[in-house]
Image (cartoon, rainbow, N blue to C red; front, side):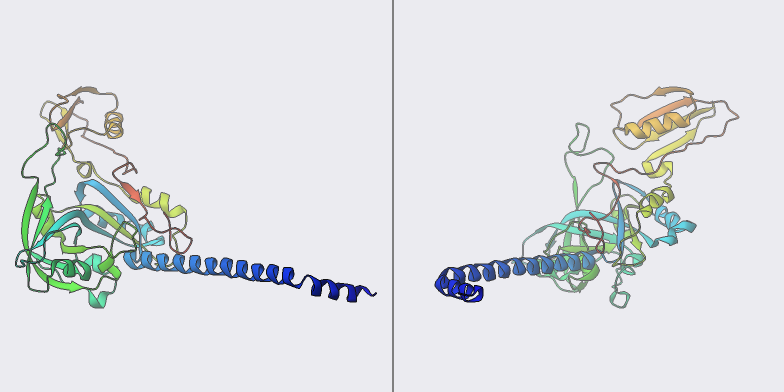
Length: 349
C-alpha cells in the first residue's frame, strides 16, 4: 500500500473528526477576525469623536483661579511659539445648570458646560459657521437645546456659581448665595459637532454646551479682563506635536505675580508688601517668593486671614522685583493635554 493511499484512507476513516476540527478552526478564525475588525472600528470611532470635540487643540491650561487674558496673547507672541502651535485662546470654563424660563414642561438641566469665549475660539473650528455672541446672549448646542425645549429667541436662566478667593466648603467660605441666576436670550442653536461638541472629558455622548461672551461672563464673575483657561492649538489636528513641544510650552508660559493672585507694593518705609487673594498660599509659590527676596527679613501676617500677606524689609534703593516660576501641573491646575488623545495620530492622554 502506497503512502498516499494510506493518507487518503485515514482521512476517509476519520472524516467526522477532521470535519469537526476544520469547523472549529474556521469558527475561531472568524471570531478573532471579527474582534480585530470591531476593535479597529471602535478605535477609529473614538479617534474621530476626539478630533471632532477638540479639533486642533493640543494643550489646555485649566486652573481654579483667574489670570489675565493677556497671558494667552503673550504666550502666542513668543517667537518660538509658531514652531509647533498656531493659537493660544483664553476662555472661562464652568459647570452650571440651565432652565428654560418660558417652558412649563422642560425642567432644569444640570452638568451644562458653560464656555466663555470670543471670536478667537470659533476660529479654531469651521469659521464659515462661527456664531456671533452678544452680551446677555447664549448659544446652545443641539443636545442642550432639545433638553431645554428652547429655540433661538427664547429666554433661559443660567445658574452660575459665584467664584471667590475662599472656597465655600472652608470654614471662612460663604455658605449662602453661592449661585447667581443670569437671564439670557438664546441667540442661536448649533449642531453638536465640531466646536459644538467641545469638551475636555472623553465621552461617546454629545455634551450639553452653552457658549457666552467671554467679557460678559468675566464681568458677571467680578473678574473683568481675566480667564480661567488657555486653549493651545497645534499646527495639524491629525498629528501629535513632537515631545519637545511639552517643555517648550512650559518655558514660553511666563505668568506674572498678578496671575497668581499676588499684589506687590512697596511702602514708603522700604517694605515690600506681597498680598495673596487665596486663603492658603501654595507652599511652592511661597518658596519662590522667599527665594526671590534674597534673604530679607520676612514677617507673615495671621494665617487665618483670607488675605495672606508677606512683608519683607529691603533697602530703599533696591527696586521691588519678584520672579516666579511658571504654572506647574498639580491636582487642580496645570498645563496638560486634553484627555482622550491616546495614539500617535489622535494625541495623548
